[in-house]
Length: 83
Image (cartoon, rainbow, N blue to C red; front, side):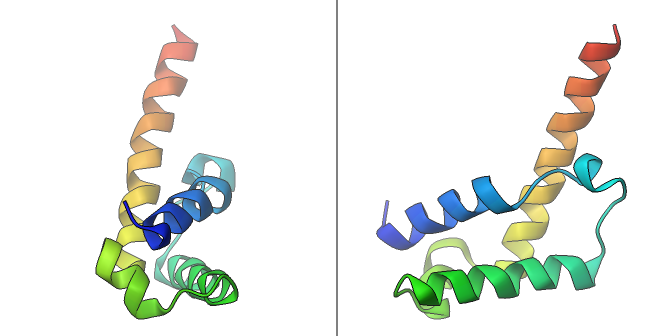
């Protein structure tokens, strides 16, 4: 795993959460803002957008997929808590 991938994983873990915590499903504009923030944070750490995309593909698509996966996990967790 590359340093760029490690950075993305760290940033996602600390900056992107399920929509449950946001009270609604976030739309394209909000996900794009997250992608923009990731790009800025990566630049501050010496990574280019190209390096990130070489590791994870399109930033927007990757973040959308991660949020969607977290939503599935959170829904399952809430169902278990309700039993």
